[in-house]
Image 1: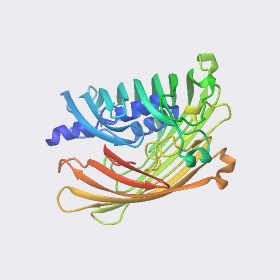
Image 2: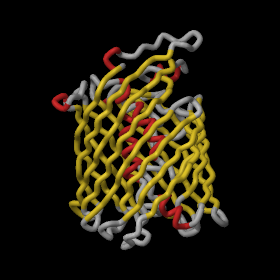
Image 3: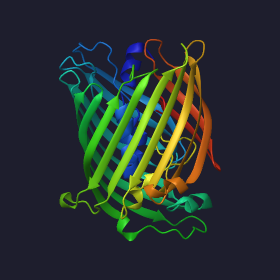
Image 4: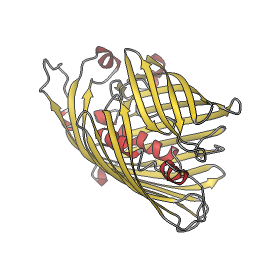
Length: 383
């Protein structure tokens, strides 16, 4: 893979990394949030910012996750720079299929203008996803009993932002999720776990403010700085939502160099949803970047928190290694976070930089949590 192709690949938050997000977002709005967080965090590359020439790339990427199994993402993206901005615009589409029979399609667009004063991200996807539902609360997750469910639906969101001060952006997010859920009772001796009738076929429409702080020295391979985001979304029945719940999501990533080849990275995150939220919009522990080592959705409740730290070290040549550990928990409400069930995780991984010119890694991580473990194959760091 040559340097130019890898530059394009690293600019694919809506494309190469989109397919796992598509599947997750169609399953839950909680994963919609983490999917959008991924879109915000994985930046485009500022190489040749004034170039007007467009580039087209079609590339297959393998993936692995405890929720969906092994699979393949096929993405295609067009990269162009009509206004000579710092980062090229990205328009792409992706398709995904995994070993548990899940599949998804999605398309997205990301752009910036007026010297990065304004940003816009938009995404739409459709998926047919097979997952396991363990119930709600820590006891349900620890019981290790689940029913197979199938989620079919459409998700779309738009996220415009404006810079109001150095490193600070504000905006809003609007999303719609049409979801149909069915239980698969063909398994032997299924446990007595039921889903609320109201949640089996529903629509969620949410709108709310978003704030971002970004002081990273390098958006692709940060060695110092902070990336933080806060979003507070509200269900709007006047726009066709079946729920009027609200959802608060907070996270912050911190980066510090420990030497020429070593970086310390840490992430803190929290989630809280109101009463009356559908089962697919409550906080999913282990979703996306929050903590590796747990099947996303096995532990879910109306509040969650997680903290993790990671050491990344560059070896000789293009190889690198990483070691990470974290802890978090879930609770029935944010006020009860102090009494939450504690869920730790630890893991390590291998990195390979496919090009000397562009610092983005192919990543393989193995993580162990409480009575669980997970293998992850992806492009780019977890956070």
